Image 1 (cartoon, one colour):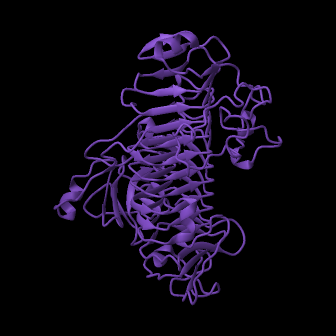
Image 2 (cartoon, helix red, strand yellow):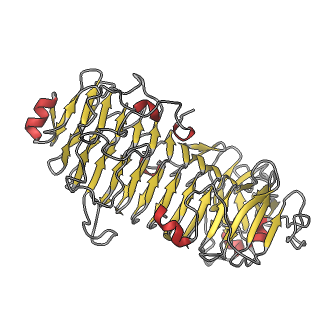
Image 3 (cartoon, rainbow, N blue to C red):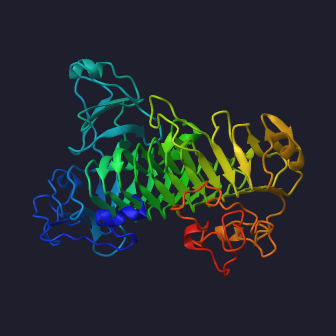
Length: 552
């Protein structure tokens, strides 16, 4: 949900302001330490006890479900009913103390031997469970076997050690390697909190373990904010094919096995001010299956339309900060990425990637832009070029800017590309791209500029060979810090060659008149005789960087 859509949905643009504009709504309380599912739950003195009870409740527009602060709840929480644009369903906390924890790992399950099947054990889970992965306490992954049309006995007779299966995903069967009762197992929910309806707010939750943290396959006007999502085996937040006009903000997402925030065929989403870190291969002592690098990124954008991703801090990604596939009309801006295996890989049509700072800390390449549309996919047609402008790419490996054979309409303007080792190419281009007004610098002698697979060891030779960068520069950008780490370090000194050296993209008709044209700090562009190259338009009063972009 972009900022301009908030009023239409009855939401505040400032996500820290919490307003629930319903009247005569029911409020339900739940406490794992003090409650009973036989209670009315309409008072904090008589709460429910389990999320299973809450998941079976028919909530209506305006209802809220409040979890007691400091309590730990066995997941999942499944929301099967939503609200309306003026009367939302809200999931929040009550009381003082730490945010309530919802965990999607049934590690305390009680196992019973199955008669007639030595070495096979079963456990009963809450009725709303949907187990996706099973590991033992030593991190050994179990293999799913399905019952199909077999009777229970015939099915269980096919089990071999480290097999598991489920009936309606609530009765789980396993065969242990030594055929002895398991001391403990990890039974991971498909999603610790899942929903499929509209106008739901989820905030102030601690979402722990599970395959996905929060997942929604359909919904309008969702708001996910101020949640702590961690140690999920796959994705932190997943919003799928029919999710539109929603907001994901001020969440902390860390230690995920795959992408931290994944938008798949979603539209008009607003993803902002999230702190994202660490995609890793071992969680809770379990080694996860090997995944392709693109599936372990900070924010994934796949076949969506008109999504806005801004002001996020992303660090220590096994994949890139941003990965795309066949995205249309989306914008990624004002983000800070640190020590990740890539900056951004924008593929699709009519994309804007600008005023991001990628301090890659020698972990990965910079920005790789390219078209990606097919007749059978969304997008099925070319809707416009990819415009990559006013970004900073620093301390990369392999290349700073790259465009391959499918990049026939990627345009690079006003970017700063700085290499700090001699083994890396500043650019790797093919003839179909357009690149100008960028500044390049390498502290050692640069490896070069590749054009159509041929290396040019000097900037002058590259300009002649390629016909690109007639206004480009090869010079020290003169950042305010000689060894930049945080975002504020990439501001420009007063003697920087970047100042007034960029192209005015509106005057060049590369940006529409209505497009917001301001720098990383919100300064209108230009302030001088021309735009500056890089993420900052002028030298502000220097002070400590904001918490958002401080890598600690």
